[in-house]
Length: 597
Image 1: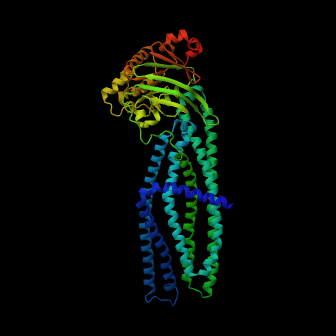
Image 2 (image 1 turned 135 degrees about the vertical axis):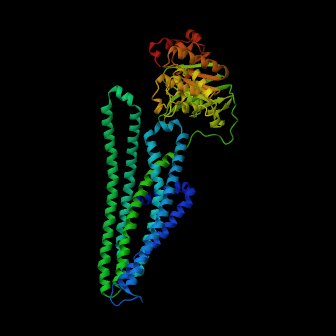
Image 3 (image 1 turned 180 degrees about the horizontal axis):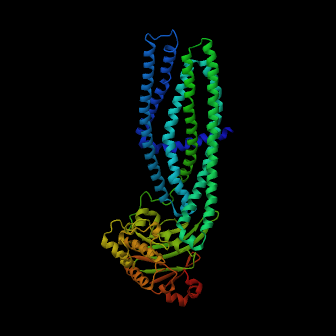
């Protein structure tokens, strides 16, 4: 194996450990207690063979004596062995418990850190990365990293001390024979480093395949009604089976490399014991030392098997931890693009003006960026009921994302009361907005908990008022448990129109001074649509209310209609005026295809 690859693997392990060591700092006393107990256990392990040597040399060998009877030597030796074992078991218990506590706390801390970072990352990041793969990193990879930093690290340090102590005892007993045993060291080094690098590579692929499988399962389960309605259940299961086989093959490849490492270690240790038996017996016959000393020597050689095996498993887990840590760091190293300034401007409680000044924005990378808004200029004032209309892809949803500063424009500025959004605190800015997009988002909690996301301090009266304003109170009263009815994942227990009204009620509950609503009337019956329209019109008297819509029948009710085409504002005025004076607007409004949202 090339030296550069060896150094590369070592560098990766070091970088991963260095990055996560600060997260282990709060657990340092538990970690040190585990390590100290491990050291004590190691010292006792080094004493374990000597009672056997007493018994063999001074109780079983004719003529040898310790100044007492052979029976007492046996009893003392057995008692010493038992005492060593009991003490070692106690220290091992402390080490195991403290290591487990450190592991659980570190897992919790890292998972919180990663989840907090994921929530803060931009929608663009989440659009580029599969949800299932992110879940695997959050739930699986974090656990592997935490185990590497606690259990594996303590075990490796403990086993390393045991190996060093055992070698020291072997050199003290017979330096010549011990030196001859070291011929296996290059074999072990090669096996651990070469196989460890391949395990890291295999684990990378395995975790990637597991992420893809998790994402497919997540999408398929969430889309079960659609899959069933299309009659594609069998195809979906077949595709899952293919992905599942691919993931299993990747896992099997990792297992093969692990088995190769174990086999190499067993062969090397078997060779060492064989050398010790052959050469040691010859040395005893030559009078170099007693049979009891040979037994102690062979016991030490055999005892090397456990820490070396554990070390090889630890090396394997370190390789897996490095691969998983690399995946976690790829997320943590992704910078949060939208951040508050160090000295933010105070946010007005009731903004009077939301303005877009020559805004240009596009999605994608710099090389393949697709422009969505181009020199977009528009102003929206408090007290106006404004409708945004345009063909699909005209930039209406992008407009909403820029208004909340989910993205920053490539050029130009978005302003509130004449101040760029970038100068406001992000949290204070978004607290001034109520956003209700076309894709409803409800959580698998009770209806009450979903509503309280809009305002955690809302009382019962406030909840029902918001439901009345969203034309949702009647059907909520008919639910078996009212506000305390569990909704199921993504609100699966409600119809599309009901989900939309619950989402709107949650948005209205915020009482935000700027309200952006996407297709609020879509999927509602006439009576519910009229109620929602009246609510929004009344809300607009003391707020900035922007309604994204395709429904031509609603346009007559707006104070202004802003017409977007190709990422620009091409018309702005009342619906009747635009029909009369603007050719493109009139064509879009009379095109039968555009009736559909």
